[in-house]
Image (cartoon, rainbow, N blue to C red; front, side, top):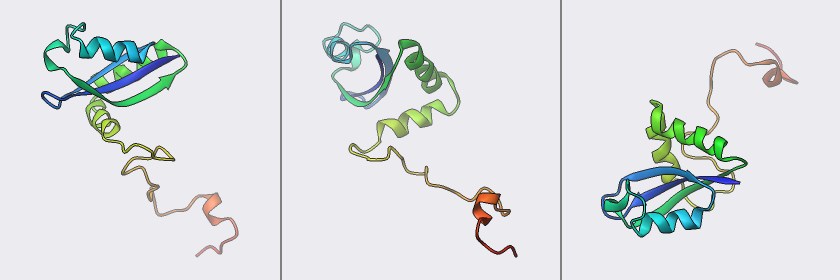
Length: 113
C-alpha cells in the first residue's frame, strides 16, 4: 500500500504533494527538517491523503497534481475538502446538463415531445 499526501505549511500556507509507503514516518521527516525541499517551510499539517495499491499508482496521481494544467486547481480542491464527507464529492461535482437531447435511459417510461 502507498499514499499520496498533501501537506500545508503553517509558515507560508503553501501546499506540498508527495508519495510514500509509511505516511507517519514521512510526515515526521518533513516536520523535523529531514526533507531538503521542505526544510525551510516547516511545520506542516497533513490536509489530504489517498491510499493506493502500489507506489506506482500513487506517483501517477502525484504527477497529475504537479505537472498538468489542471493539477494545481485539483490539488487546492483536494486540500480544502471538508473532513467527514460521506460520498467524497467536492463542490462542483454534482450532475450537470450536458445537452438538450436526453439519452434512452432518461426517456425510459416517459413520453417523447
